[in-house]
Image 1 (cartoon, rainbow, N blue to C red):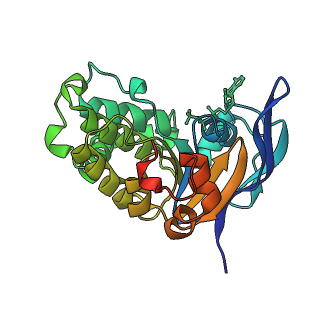
Image 2 (cartoon, rainbow, N blue to C red):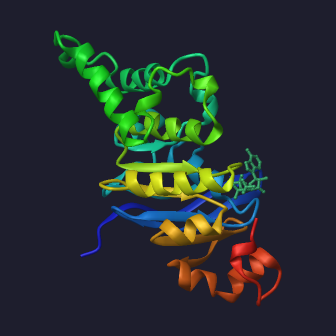
Image 3 (cartoon, protein in one colour):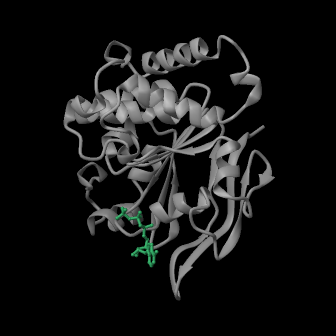
Length: 256
Ligand SMILES: Nc1ncnc2c1ncn2[C@@H]1O[C@H](COP(=O)(O)OP(=O)(O)OP(=O)(O)O)[C@@H](O)[C@H]1O
């Protein structure tokens, strides 16, 4: 039986008559790494904004875990476990890595009386923060000031703060953007690692990353789904090649 965690039906967003996302029927399998790709302006970011309700759809339905969440507020959707990776600017540069992860954990716990009434709550909080830093390979830098981290490790910290929100579905927005080859490799492996027991929907331009870790790919063009399938299927689709390269005999590897 297929196990779909996220499903959209006819998801559409119009901006003053311009259709940025057009009747998108997206189906994300639980436990998969699903990539959303497409040329500039294809509607990828708008899709993410609709899924997290930073934008209200003009039309369409969003189901998460079988529940219609279309009319829910962003905070409600986040509480359900749909968490978009924080932008790098949301990580406090003058605080240590440990402090940043603790703040993310506190944000998740909020004013839960059950948690804070426990005498050992601070120990638990610190323990959880260390475990998250370990998960992303940054535990040895726990007391380092975030500002001093190289770019690749800042993105790993961003993933740790996202994990602190206990995501069931993580939305990663161009996680390897602006990285050198080694950082791309490291973050690719990190995404693979943290995908265990979670579902990841990622916007990514780097075809090497996509071919390495994506189970399924949805290609958007001018707001609509152009193609879907695994890397092999999508990369050999003449329409996809055309959309990326303006040629039907090009290779997707060269895109972006
Ligand atoms: N708030 C807005 N008002 C008007 N038009 C918008 C708005 N947001 C996005 N658009 C338009 O919608 C289209 C899709 O934009 P979007 O940012 O979703 O594309 P994208 O696939 O994420 O592109 P990129 O890869 O360049 O980030 C673009 O033509 C963009 O100009």
